[in-house]
Length: 294
Image (tube, rainbow, N blue to C red; front, side):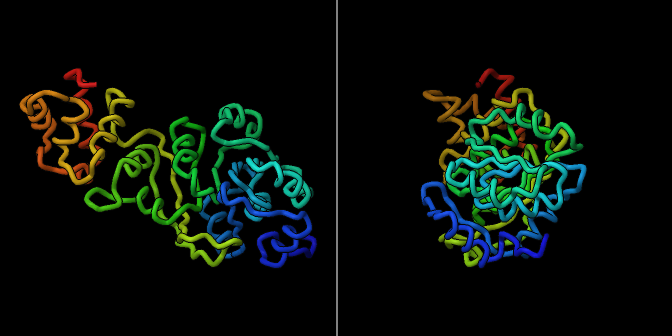
């Protein structure tokens, strides 16, 4: 790197912010990472090389983007804040394989973006320090659209990362855990203290890697119905699976039909939603689907 400090150093971050007169917008969840060791762990977890691509969401002033540019053959950074575009174009001007897009990633046609920006690489990873207020919508869009991704490596709120990786039976396990694990294999990489950001957030963060599955670990007759059953099962966590499902699929009826279907699926009516595995939810959703409870 031509002897210049990396963007992620606290000194250079402050210089860039001052030089461009940038002010943070709390509404956009802007927290810039200033720890090079954490950046190393993020990029290493993404398993990049010259033949791979990286999609970054919310690049800020380019600290992670710069690291991605050193490792990947093609990098696209999607930034919603127009004020950051000229800063990114300035600090990343020496990297011809970095594409800066001004857009809201939730509104972008990602399949078209992949065709336009990643046609020359063999595989793509999403690597990002995500704004906490839109973490779940962004990740679910990336997973549900079944993009040609190898993995997603993101820094998010620690509590949300723990929910994504949670196993059945714990307090963190819920509909988000099931949705993420249906599409991917989550692995917590490291926790991140709030002190390594400018400005400092009020919560702890974590880096999580979602290794994209070639196919879901369970087969279901109707995917939309499967997720409907999962969401219904967690409507009120303290209630039993029987009570939650009755309210959604058997309103105004007795319990006999529901309990017969639960027995067919091999599930005790007194269990709570957080105790069921993906395989049990798949079995239950298929039984309800066959019975026309949709």
